[in-house]
Image (tube, rainbow, N blue to C red):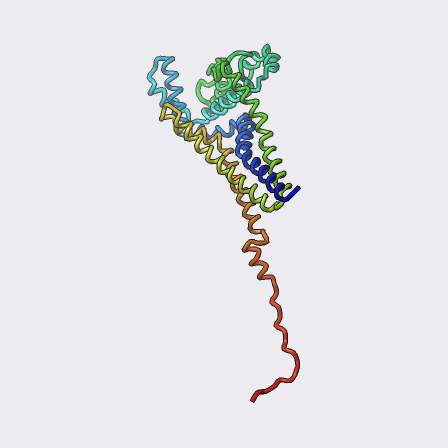
Length: 323
């Protein structure tokens, strides 16, 4: 293969690798980061102490209870806002996020056989440990409020709150996703599940192949590193633009700070990945340039190490003295 053809093929492979870097990172984050219940709960846990999120929870819960009970919503909002500063609220927050995420992921993974096999015994288990999940096949995705009230009751009892043991634990289902959206969401989840594995792998394979077939491998390494850094910068820009568009679409401007806090918590790993790609690419590119034989640094080092040639002595002979 001629050097020109090798250079062209290397350029195509490196370009494909750099193009797949941001999309591969995004797909891997969606397929493995968002779908992990433990990671999701850990990411959402600090939001329990976020003032903007606490205000939204107080307004939502207070208004809902006020409509049902016919009470003053202002009083209920203040009561709920005071409750958001307690340890029991953080326990209920983590339990609610875990239950909601588990129910959604069961529905997206379409565990029909698993749900059908456990349909008979699930109701009895819910009464014992408060676990909930998705409804039967074909219905909406729901979560049982007992998954929140049961640990809340245990926490309040441990804190010796009066009458905490009398708190009712009712198995009330709350809809999370309508059944009409499940088919499209399941297809999207399957696509992300496949793309989250193959896109990053393809980016690495194309990059290694492009460097291997290049006529000048140092130049190919530099191009791949700069493309990786550019992909990391593009990924960070996409996260920032996505945040702006997400908040702009919210009709209620008062809830945008809380939505921004949730968005930042969910995309923290993605932002870290973008900075790592940018730093790694620039570091490798700078190293390849600084170690090039023709770079000023290498030439300066070579000049310092080259010994000075001795001045040859004049030939021995008679020296004529001119008058």
